[in-house]
Every structure is written in structure tokens, then in C-alpha cells.
Length: 415
Image (cartoon, rainbow, N blue to C red; front, side):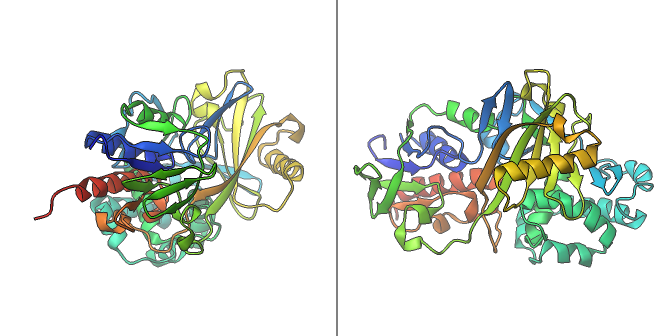
């Protein structure tokens, strides 16, 4: 098995997990990564004494796949408080999390986020979803999430004030057209787990998986032009012969015959600003209702002190879409920040912007898992990536594991 030439294209979570599982089975795979670092969409930069994740991302501690690959205590996870701070017109109010503590319903009864009936339904929904397996959730009828919420009996008030701004930031689309399967899965995960970040940034997640690799060779700055049969054609002109290939990037990028078969991915713009101090003052996500450039905000140093080493607060701002040039976008966002915080726009110092063009795959048919046969497209080529299942860290890890299992299975003798 050591002599089998197994190449993995892409060093994101799916590729790293595939390599780890192949190592466990006795193989020594080679990862080809087009950039100069691991992580795919999960990266953290250090800039001016700040830790900047590429896009506002969190790790949900309830994801089932995590226990296979991560030591959560070693990541020193820092959790967000459940719920959110809602900025609505000239008002600010907090939505607590009745999913976790039914006694908070009493306090929430006086919040303007929704009706008392809405808050009871939140609790009921959480209880129902905890009883459903993840497989049952993804086998269920699929509706647009906005229709699912209406059918469940939630009022327009709570859909407008909570569900839309909160889940827009997760689904990265404005109208909650995402499948109700994904809504139920995410809602369940938030009701039994915590949204958290590693103390030193989201980049610690792929780094932890990489440290477990001992027999995998990793080549950076090695973009693949195309895969043909059992050969990998690199952009520098080199051709590699392979016994098995795992494509752990969206496959139309390296297989010409698949071009045009994938929908454009969801995008997000992530701006970072520094401020003298946080105006939220607690580790909570801030949501804006209605039509604004900003969808959600979070002071990352409120969650983990390590995100700022210079004494200033670090504000992450997420924007789903904008046609503005960067300078105009920064000015417009500062204006909205002044409006919601009462802090003059001039005090928000711009740090850096990330335009994440492939933030989430756009999927019609969401799945929790797939049989090994569905990730195999030829006798030698296998696929891995969250686009095969659903847009999540859990799905990326699952897909990498299934691709590796399919390769291991392909070497087993048939009777």
C-alpha cells in the first residue's frame, strides 16, 4: 500500500481528513495545494496585532464529526453566548436562548423580538429536533426555510427580527431560500452545542489535523491544471501518474468535462475594524434587521482575548453582497456602525477586508451523508468536499472520510 500513488488535490479540511484516513489504512498520500498554506476556506492571518479569520466563521461543538479529528480541549475553544444582540431602528434588545434554558422564556416574554407564542414555539421546535436523528432531518421533506418557518406558525415579527438576520449570516443568502433540512440541522446543532472559536483563531482547526499527519507529503504552490484519466497535469507543465486521485476542490476546476455543472457559490464580504473598546461588551453576535449593508457583527476579542494583542477591540463585520468599491464600502459601513452604536464613524479604524468568493456551495439537494459509490466518478478518481453534502465544517470532514473509505474499499479483494 505504501507504494500506491494516491494524490489529493486541495489541502482544505476535506483533503486533510482524507489524507489522515488514508494514513490510518497504511497509505502514504501526497497533497497538492495551489496556495501557500493549508485550510482552504478556513484561514487566520495575523495583522497589526490582530488575528483575522477569513470571513466570520464559528465551530459548532455539536458537530458529530469533530470527535473523530479534533481535541476540542486542546483548541481551547471560546464560546459565544447563546442568542444575539438585535439592532432594530433606534432600539437594541437581546434575544436569549430558550432552546438551552426554558426559564429564559420568562425574560424573553418582554423582548420585542417576537410574540410569547413565538418564544414557546422556539422551545418546542428545539425539543422536537433533538429527538430527530441527523439522518432523519436530511431525509425529510425539503422546503425553503422561510416557508418552513411560516408553516410552523412563527410570526412575521420573529422571522424579521431574528430568523432572517441570524440565518442569513449562516446561509449567506438574503431570503432564506435555503432548504429547511439545513435549517433544522443548524438549529439542532445550536440547541445542543455552542458556537465557538479556537482561542487563537479558526486556522487552528486545519493545523490540528495537519499535525496528525506523519506519512503524507504536502506540496504548496502546486496548482493543478486538469485531471485526465489517471494523470494529473500541473500548471507548470509537469504530469503526474496516479493510482488513485481525490479531488478535494470543486471538481469543475480540474475536470473540463464537469464545467458548467455547478451553481455559483455563495459569497461574503468580511471587513475588520478596530475600536477603543467594544460597544457590545459580551461575547455575542450582533444582528441588524431590515435592509442594511451589514448583516451581522461580532467583537472577536469579546470572545477570545487572543484575537487582539494591542489593547484595541476587533470588530468583524459581515456583508452578504455589495457593488461598492472598497473605499466606498468602508465609508458606508462606518456610517451604519455609527448609527447602531452611537460611536462616531471616525473612531472605527479599518484593518482589512476579505472577499470570500467561495464561502459556501450553493446546493439544491442537501444530504447528511452519501454512500461510498457516490464519491467515485471513475475507477481512479474520487471526490471530496462539502458541496457533496451541505455547506458545513461537519460535511467537509465527512466527505473527506468517505472518499478515503471508498479508496480503501477499492483495494479490497472481491469474492
